[in-house]
Image (tube, rainbow, N blue to C red; front, side, top):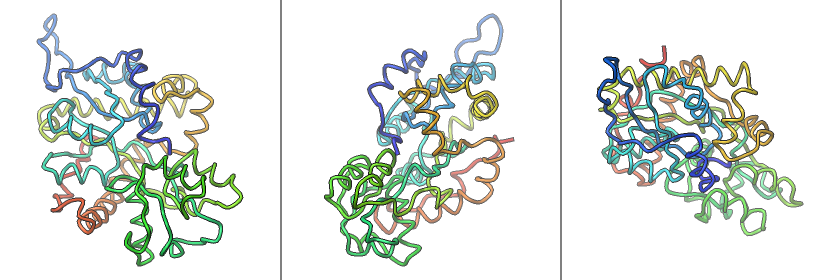
Length: 331
């Protein structure tokens, strides 16, 4: 998917036009003005992935501000940069996939997931040559894959495990997801774990197809917001404001898309028409979706990912997975 590593330069410029000014990173309160309660300042690290775009709507429409949260949305395309910034308290949280939050927790940064944002429903997938008819057929094949953790790595690992296979059964060619798609279209590998537009480009070749896409494995590639536990403990009302602002933005998109789409498109650096097409590949999570997802789905993903990351030596100890979830702000 165009996801998490897309339009980085454009996004930096656009963030200025959105008024997403730099934050002190303290997560503290300013001195009250006029005797009133000052808003809580916080910074959230994100990529320009379309699934995060309702955050820009909530920022522009004042949905956070009216709830007492002065939120800076800080574009940081690389998840490692987001993790380092949160560890240093330059940002108070960031958006990524749940299995990636495990790596953060295992590295000693206390993180708690408070909100689910979106689910990929067709924008990620595995492309393969036409003679490969299932995941089992990938055994012994050359597969382009972004290694070291993350959505693509976990997606493939999850699917392999269901077939009794592992990464070791494949000939892995490490590269970014975008490069993986390009390598497949160029005929350099047998298969690739990638995202749009490379799924469509693979189908357009005379030798390739989409072996499986994320709409056939719902709930596997999702995004959540993880916050520093100390910030959550100190500013619970700000966390409620973050969650409430997101829900209002998603509701606006659902009810009056024409009012939300310009901000969403500008955030991701695409046209409104392109945004409409890309959003067809994503499910934006509202309150009901969050309650369902945190009611059991995410716990299963975290458990599976933790075992996989231990096996692959991406982490050396399993964090307390239950402590990584706080659903009290969803109501």
